[in-house]
Structure formats: C-alpha cells, structure tokens
Length: 463
Image (cartoon, rainbow, N blue to C red; front, side):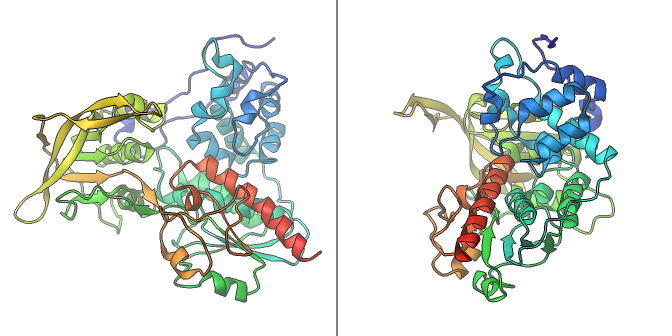
C-alpha cells in the first residue's frame, strides 16, 4: 500500500545556530528507513509526469519503486542509466521547479521528495558499492571537452561509454568547474564531487588541468592534435557589475571571486594561503542562489550582520525556496525592494557603507512582469565594510575571441542549435557557455544532448 501522507518525510538538518559557525553540510540526509517511507509515497503513475520535468530524463518512478522495496543498488543503477552525477543532482537541482513540480502528489499535498531520494541512493551507493567500472571498447576516435563542470563531465561520461578517447581540458588546477569553485561545502561537499570525477577517470576519461583554452591551446590546435570533435562547456564565469560609483573600492568582491576563494582555495580554513576579508557587516547584492551562497558563507566567516539587497520582492527572487529558508534561519537580513546607488569609501579607499534607495513595483508590462522603480526620498545608507555583487555572469570571451568561425550572440554566449551544434564544423557547445548562467541539471542535459550529436557527427564522417 502506498504511504498517503500529505507531507514529505522531513530531512534531518544541522541546527541553524550551530551550522552558521561551520562549513559542514547543512542537510544530513535520509536513513534507510526514512528513504523507504518517503519512496512509498510515490503512486508510480503510468503517465510519469515527473520524468518529463527532468532535463536528463532520470527514470524516476522506477528508481523510487526500487527504493521503496529496499533495493538500493538496483535503484542506483537505474539512476545512473541517464544521470552521471546523482549525488550532485540530489543536492543542488531545483527539483521544486522541475520533477517535483509535476508530481501528482503535489496536487493535494507535498510532492514526493525526489531529490532527497536521489541523494540518498547516490550516497548509499558511494558508501556500500565497490564495483569496478565497465570500460567500453575503444573506437579509436578522440574528443576534446573544454571545461570540467557539469556540462563537460556529463558529455565526457556519455562519450566514454560509447568508446571515445575523451580528454577534458580544465583552466583551474582542480576539476569540477562550478561544482568546486561556486557551490559552498555546506551545500555540496567537495569529496562527493571528487568521487564522481574519480568514477569518470576510472572509465578512462583523461583530465588535463591548468589548461586555459584560448591561451595554453586554441580550439584549432586541438583539431591539429587529432581530436575529431570539440565540446565547449566552459560555463559563464565572467561576473557582471552594477556600474555604480565605488565599485573599485577595497572590500568590493564579485560573488565569483568571493566564492572561489572560499570554496576552491579553502580561505575559510585557519591555515589558508588565499586571503579573504573577515568582515563585520556585509551587503550581498542579488537574489539568486549565488547571492544566498555568498551571504551564508559570509556569516560563517564571522560577520555580525549580513544583508541580502534585492530590488524586487521575495516572490520574484530566483533563488531556491530552500536556500532562502536556510538563509533566514541562519540570520541573514533581507532588504527587499532595495537597490544600491553608490558604494561609499573612506580616505584609504576601503568600503564604509552602501547607499540604497527603496523601490516599488510598477504596473505589469505585456508579459505580466512588474519592473521596480525608485521611490523618491527613500535614500538611506547601510553600514557595511564589504559589498559582494551577485547579479549574474556571462561566458568568458577568451574562447570566442580565439576561435575562427564561432558565432556568438549579443551576450557573448556561443550560438548552438538544440543538439549543441555550433557554426564551426566539429565544434559543439552546451551549458552556461550557450545559455548564460543557469542550473547544474540543465547544463548536464545539454552535455548529454551534445554527446549524442557528437557521436552521430563522427559516425557520419566515417561512414
């Protein structure tokens, strides 16, 4: 009999007062008993609406049914048929706007906790399974993958299964892309990312770090080295700024720099080589997941007050509801309908305040979106010594500026069709390099799609 409870089995978590003082994972995961109980809430619908909401088409009812039966190894194998990074996706995917949004149980209660179950199954497999990888027979063809983030890892994983000799080129000294430099330890432990990467290495994928494509090597030189195709999954790592006075002051960070210092360079540790400000009062400008990550990291570094400064209302915030909830629990102060106009500095060039103005939402436009407009006479100053800008990113221009015949759009994103094919023959692209900053799971979906197109392209050239 299905479990007809209207609510999900709660996820155990660290107490907010404790976790705001450490970088350990907030959510502690289900026990076996909890996972089975939650999995039994699934109705195993014949029309499978949840699967249609998954960018990598995980066979959700099947893996949940196996979980409900306590067949955790079989459930893991079912997920791995289409998802090469389940431990990651179970933690950072926005399930509430994808698979869980389409869950029938969500009509009269809470949807099945698909993400929590995926995380449980992946973690169980990492702890209990010691299977040797099944290496595919080589087909003698080489493919280059630029970037070791979710798009690149997903693409490489599918290609190596088809027998390709895959080499990933990563600009940083550590593989993982945004999974290691962008997402904090308390949301995504880096040892889990490394285990997922180790799984690809065991299957034969090669990773070359400290390789800045466009400087160390160009795309043209990759073809000269004998690669039959190139996939560009280099992400969107170029931060945007507001272009307001004071953005060049000491104590102003892009969220990218701030999080990279903390996550990749471990600046939160006592003996860290990479420095970072131990701020007293911090303002984080933006309302997405990156803004939440930066704010929650600042509180863990010892800041007394941390503000989220966002020019729209909470309803318009693009961050996950879970991240907003956790930020509030940890004492982050939300300054909504507030827009920065100037960063104030002292005589030595350091931040001493953030001038803001209150906003109000205008009448809806033709799309129904309400634009924020300033309210006269509401200027005020936040007493802060650090400002972190988290208003978005775009692709780095290096690859497009050094690759002939590669079409890009006005945002600097590579133009690619629905299969990842670009204007340059043999070059495919996907993820944030094409869409601009988006989600991990969408980038993974793009990597999988491109892998299929690359296989078809190479096969057609050799037929």
